[in-house]
Length: 467
Image (cartoon, rainbow, N blue to C red; front, side, top):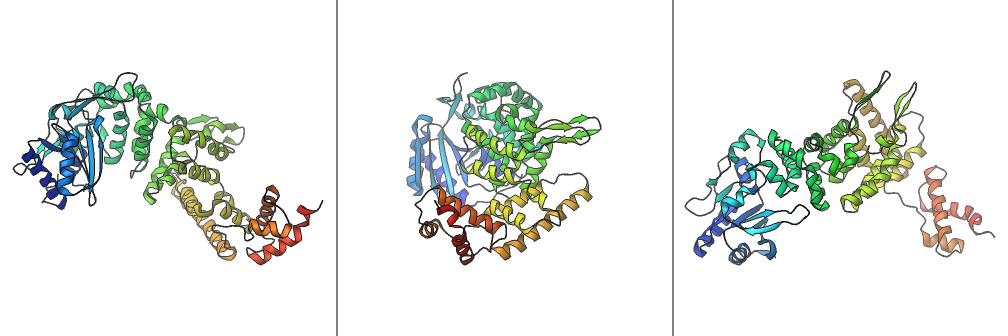
């Protein structure tokens, strides 16, 4: 582990430590801050345990440091405030438990030792002295620092009890393993498998938050593979669990779509921090199990899996209670992800290229990133050829885009102008005319400019206005 000289954050924490001594409050830095400090990872958030009134001491600290954004949750004995780029949270030393049918924890005040033992993993069950005399000294009753060195996730107490008390810790195990690239202790892994049904009492928002955190890590496949191995994936994301399985019929092999999807997501994670893009990569093949067919002489087929996946995504995102941008973005890329490969042939028309640019709009670069990540063959020559094909499509798109200005395409003749020319009120006929103008541009009948579109409108308007 790395040693630390006093940083600006250390000096702030020391001020909080002096305040604690002056007021007779035993206060300790705890959890992720202590873990990251030992790993040499900079922190902007610090959690403190207060043996006494957490919110009361938080308010004193905020006033001393002239912090802002003070928030208090009296029921849970927590409060927080902001100072510069840092966030400080204070919690009354507590223990939590869940009834078998409850999603909300029952909270009781306790001492530091009990507070630490009720935490999820040994690497998060450490505290740090913040008083001047012992500043920086680690309180480590469960050998968390040794587990950091071993790169292992282990619960402080019996894992069955730990997960029974707070089932969300099951998801957090997969998340921390993914975030830190740690392995999970066998007993802890077995308890995750045994207690997975307990996740049903946890709110969907908290589970989805953990899923998105796994997806945000440098190698998301670590976390999702743990969820698969323990059977948790079937509970929290059955659509992805359904991708698991390798099948053979006659001489034809159908590869494991789950393993393929994990490679796609990891490929995207290497190239982009865009969480929406990674989500689209995770979901782009969810329609395959529903359309999988074996065709004699051809082998396994997945016709229209992109359309089926697009429809599935809306319900899935509602169930996961994700923000609206996730289904919108995911559906668009899932629907389109097979289109670029269809444009590889040399005789593909400019019209076909225009239509892809039109339908993808501002997401065209993300779509092409997904398509490249979708190349997961173990054959280097095949990968090289596929990438060359996509580079060809990209060049074609750039040529058409520069010529026809298709990026973020909008009809050059607006609805108000159509109504004036055709003498129509607002309504479906105006939309139909606008659609025909767009189709004419996409088909290359007219160029993408206002004058040409206006002249074409004069030519076709009688089709829509004649009795």
